[in-house]
Image (cartoon, rainbow, N blue to C red; front, side, top):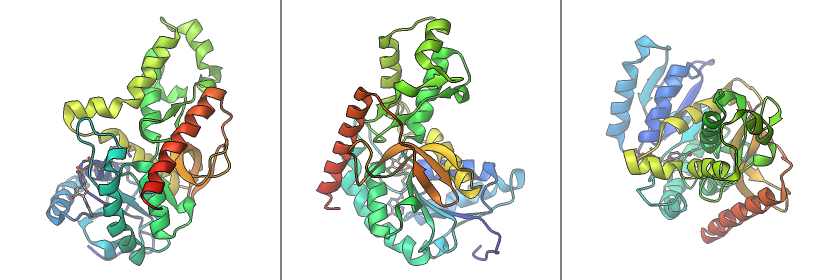
Length: 318
Ligand code: NAD
């Protein structure tokens, strides 16, 4: 189905493996998109997913879904890229860099040929490196190239904290910043429940309150992907929903604060690198990142995270 109308909201998904297909399914259920086009170099896979998803349409939102090619990126409000190799058990996200950068070198020019003014939402790993690469390869302004960043890590963190505190995860306000990967940083200094510092809340309300418990919660957050991949081979539900949440903030112009990866400048000495901080996300992509006040340990952690990312960017010659 290649026709569109002036009011359509087209989302193109490039790479329809575990993450891309799960995102497409969650997006269909959200009703946010009137058109979803699936693009994959494994065309049969894209066709199969489109057929399967179309059979859910009569039971949910009216949506046109088809397996297309790059010309179908024309007019898409957002092009979401989930193509690439995924981590195998024991592999880090940074181990994927050469393979997935080569894939991005082939994908991005084709997207830009047909959609020179759109928004790119990057989900492939290593996330921050590929988001920076996508900005360079596309020539788009940085606010139009958004990495899903630590939206997933922050969700994992909030979930685990909520289990500890015995409240709804949506009532826990805490962020993971920095790399979407091993050097990510928990922001304990501003973590809160109902405006109460997390430490105060836990002193009064949690069964166990000590530094070891917090350290374990962060470890489980940071290493969650390894534990899931060991058990089921891949992770995709959390990120699928995270991508829908980012698309919602964009398409509805919500100005929502989300921890996504963006180009950082002049923040605690960090410059010209993509990493995650809480960002305001709306119709024009990332309108700003929030200059969170951090404590000394958090600043040191973030600077180290930026350093790891910069070294990888330089190795790619970007
Ligand atoms: P997958 O192997 O299931 O799917 C990848 C898809 O990309 C495949 O269908 C493949 O055919 C396609 N592809 C490969 N090269 C392509 C190209 N040149 N053009 C078009 N399509 C191409 O992998 P997955 O589990 O879906 O993971 C995809 C990516 O998402 C990985 O890099 C993974 O590490 C990452 N990921 C990110 C997060 C996050 O939080 N951002 C979470 C989970 C996974």
